[in-house]
Length: 474
Image (cartoon, rainbow, N blue to C red; front, side):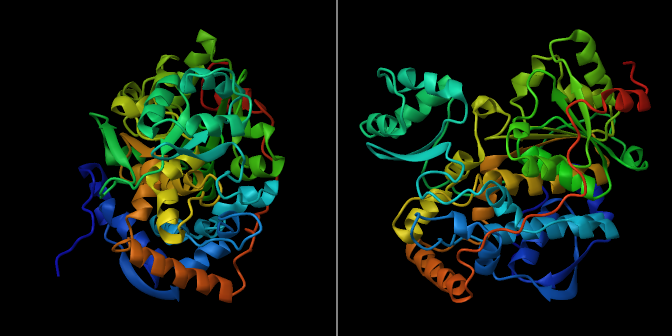
């Protein structure tokens, strides 16, 4: 039989082929773990072990089913193995780490964890967090996120109308406009939005090696505890760094003194979950002296995680490719909404609208006849877990890589893993999986919330200590 698994995306991963990796167990999650590791050039060995949860049960157990569908109705199944993909990515990470530290890794409950903490509920065409809506246009649907107060000030230019101060008014204006026009104009204005259409034919890579150091040496990264510098904010990037910390990495979270991570203003428990155990460094990004400190910090790091649009760091004089040239063991992990090349580099995205862009809401429309959001900002935790695997893999392969992950591409990759052959097959699968979850009484299950040993560090609490320990003048 012809092998249809995706070949390794880049020779950069070739050193992983020699690693002895064992993947115990069976089931959809384990098959997905094999696919991920194979795409990275590894050849994991199958080992006896427990069967992974059925995809329907994994979705319900994660708490995502309780966050999908209309209020007052039963939670809705997703007919794609999204939660199994989370468990599979974590299984791949365990296999790659290959030590006892992996007992600290979580499971697919990551998908519903934030909602359980904040008491969020499903809203059908209103995201669980409330900042994103599915709106009907003249020729289709789109998702619009208005997460920032300034976004509302852009609406008159976007919709070519007068002031708009409510979602019903926005919905009325969108209803008479063409989706393509709205999406094009919205992107130019810097709005986070996406058309809800079927995704383009695959295969879609879940990560991309975008650049390499000319002096990469696999031996240089084999030194002690890896140093992770986390420049990211909110969910996907901080989750990635938190998982690397669970594997034993030393993680330093770097924030702007003037604009710290927005998660600090959210539920404290969630911020602690994402950032406990990380040292906190705060710098003034308007200060040339502090930018120089940041540059020195990046040049001694093993892994850098950032989730800004490329131009944001370039404006600070920080260029990923230049960092690779100066630090041959560095793995630079870039998390974006839709990619960091061509016109996608400037597009803004959040977890909910990125999931819609990938085709999740279109899939739900095919399956149920009703369009809706899936889970809570689902592209964020899904990408965070995959990002941790990409970062650890690149580090184990020797570093010297700029690795890009896009929220929409990670979701689309998961949708392509176990597709149904047509709409009727999608409907049949949805009915079967829905019945499985309902029969077990899990349709309304809320995600379990992990405990943390200590709260996240106060902003800037470790700035002097970290810089001094790394020989960087304060």
